[in-house]
Length: 241
Image (cartoon, rainbow, N blue to C red):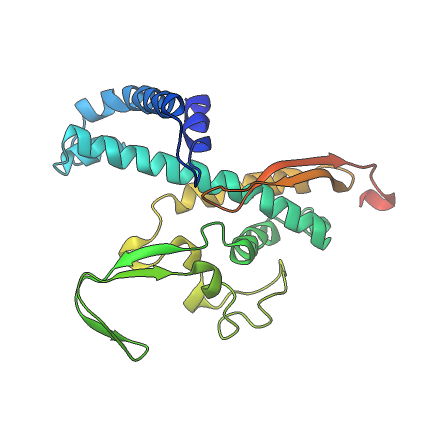
């Protein structure tokens, strides 16, 4: 399942797919859905699975399939792009060592890293009704592009916004804005946070000093990411640091 999901996620790029690659992606999507089909077929409103609840909410087969695949891809792609960038940021800033033995600071480091890198730099919303915003009239149905990367660097919410600081206390008004807000808040938030914290805490707990030995940026991708990030652990310093 993981290999199949990675194959689908890796196909999401800014340039069109070849016919052969598109057929391969469709086969992988079909395999993913077959793994979830039993939960859909036995699902109901009080089901313990998301796909079961989708059926219980009245979604047809194709509708539930589309929602499930979107959730799978969105969760896989964003977390996979964020984790290497977060690790590189901690190493480059010299703040990885601060996290050793401090799980609370590791959690704060994930929040600050996501603010600083904004793994999903922009999102789109559609106005549900006419409104006035910042002196402009927005008609019902207007499409709005929200630049998450700009929100995360707003000096009114984050003083000295271009400084990465794992000990930063985030303004409650802007907390987790990069996950959305209100009814659009990311459904995968708890899982994404847990995955990233496990990675950060795991690396911070290793003896020695983490260093980057090779990196290469990914180009023409849907989300900012590294194509290659190789890290190595150096010898532990005196005193266990």
